Length: 376
Image (cartoon, rainbow, N blue to C red; front, side):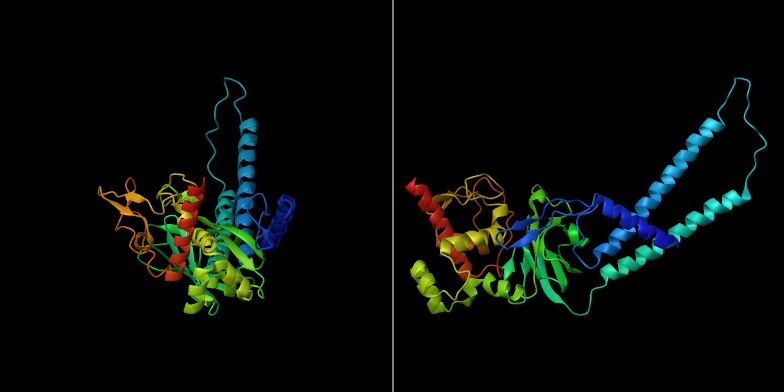
């Protein structure tokens, strides 16, 4: 009876508190951006979110009820039993009240048992991963996320199919991070030197915010990404087109690099293929380069990419080096070999995470940025 009444109060409160912000659509994916929710919580977009919210609201409203009851009784007794004249003395014959003492011991104990049992069952449901699902590897580093898919593709946003169990295996390249998707009610620490696992099943298509919920350095607030939930039939299409370079043979790649526009026009079936500089800019965004390296000359954790191609880059050891293909490759695969003057050696290696073809596209982007500077 008590549980049913609690659920009724929860649903009434949620209905009254639900926000009515107009839906917003991301034009690049044609999926709704999550901006709904209640006063207390963002929208429920996973199969376990409603369980967590129900428990949260039960405990919240139970605490509010007893807070109001206790404070109300306190003020009532302050008024009824106040000292009414100077000669009045406190009563000395009060001993105890057995029924009252039993009531305030047994009732809270019973409620604590309910909260423990309910919380423990929800905890088991949330922490016990299903036997089957779609596996994705998660790599966290200051200050970006990387998500690895079974076909070898990596992305800095998490793309998943709707109504599918998603199994995440996570590790950190540097310090402690925390994977947190508020709309899914999923949060798990990502620890250096070990693997942690979590799972979720997103039951609504759309875009949702992914945050790092553990302070991890001066750009901690920038360590966010998007979870993009695709319709089931659209997800394989996205995955196939997410890495257009991997679909090219060595001969096609050479032809593409020598005359990109001609190659793209001659191969309309290769969806997602763009000029090398454009692909390089997407890789700058997708691989997390944008966290430390700007394209507009702004100072950041790492040197800007604007106008660096072909210059003599001063190094921290007092020497200098030409920014060319070899320097860019070394900076990606062995970043602490040549550290720019005025910057710390904090960049992790991208060995095994960036392919040779992708390095070529990043080089093309750097060249295009310098060409734009020259034309000004």
